[in-house]
Length: 70
Ligand code: SF4
Ligand code: SF4
Figure 1 (cartoon, rainbow, N blue to C red):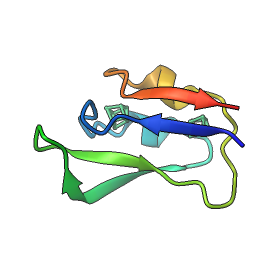
Figure 2 (cartoon, helix red, strand yellow):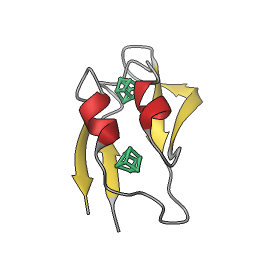
Figure 3 (spheres, rainbow, N blue to C red):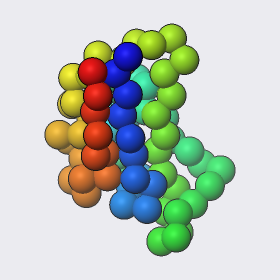
Figure 4 (cartoon, protein in one colour):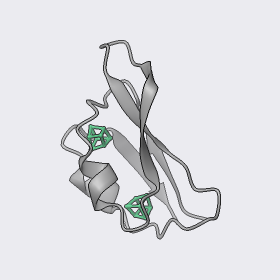
């Protein structure tokens, strides 16, 4: 089952990964902030839809998505 990891402390909440994921599995989190005071995004895949395509990781300008397993 593919899974990605997001380092919330590196995330700047730019939403690029949210827009590129073909399955829309990365969602904004408006409830919490990291130490820098930014909201951050979260990966949620309750129905095992992640393709492991790594589009999210490749697109992140801050390399906050650091692991994609297939
Ligand atoms: S690996 Fe692909 S399908 Fe999975 S969360 Fe990232 S962009 Fe979406
Ligand atoms: S692309 Fe990177 S910095 Fe931008 S919202 Fe996604 S994880 Fe955060």
